[in-house]
Image (cartoon, rainbow, N blue to C red; front, side, top):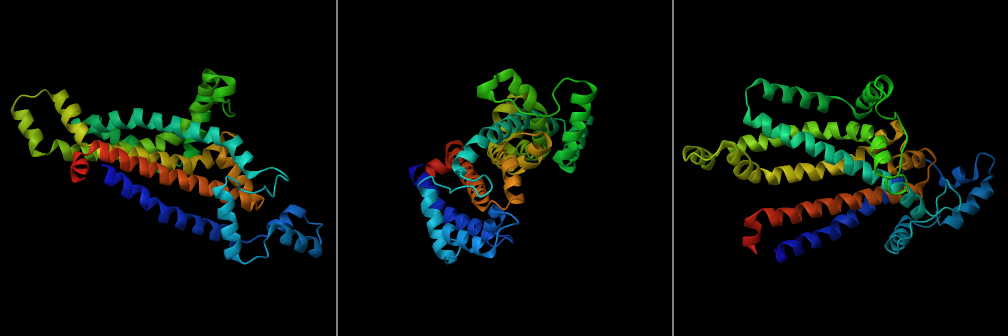
Length: 317
């Protein structure tokens, strides 16, 4: 197990290096001049050139990259060009909690809906229950999150008035109940899309396991169906489910921007969209790097869980 963990940790180094290079180049090759955006339409060419020199934008691209990486390693992501004088790290810190809370809440909804439904569809293969689950999964995959969010707003907020249509309440500052009330609709909008995909993957994994010889042997010995489904079936399909859960969390982070804008949530997705509109390169680079790092860490956690769940990996060491 230690050898397995060591290999996974070493593999992070080239991954992080390549990701940082790609992020830096993509942002700097995007059309637009951050110095001109900072100074406004009335700025002269001399003012723009002076600000270029001050920000180091005239230096070679390699020098700018090395300087940026060095600052990032110290936790310094620079100063926002849109919010003058505001450190990028402070901006991200103030928008980080809503996005993470939304991603976690949506994944909890996804797991609670998708895994039982996928297991049920596998157990009732070919029945009306199986077809019902398939219809819902196809609907979830086909519907964009913003369209589902608008439908939920019309039904649960406007018609039934059960939940607020938009806004955000902090879990730490405002309490658990207001947080749940304001975050449920966005989490449903984001989570149902991933639940549809997880339903299909859980069903496929369970059908593969339930069709195995050892499952037929267990049935022939009179093992109870519930024990076959949970103890033998789901346990052996768990690796696939773990992968889907991890990828779903990554997708939730990546897709949070649309939902945050729709429900007026001050998360990193909203900050990212605003920064793109204002050509705030420092913030764009920092958020993209942070999300990429979270993806790398989540994939590492999935690999470590594999090592704990799969005895073949432990025996290989």
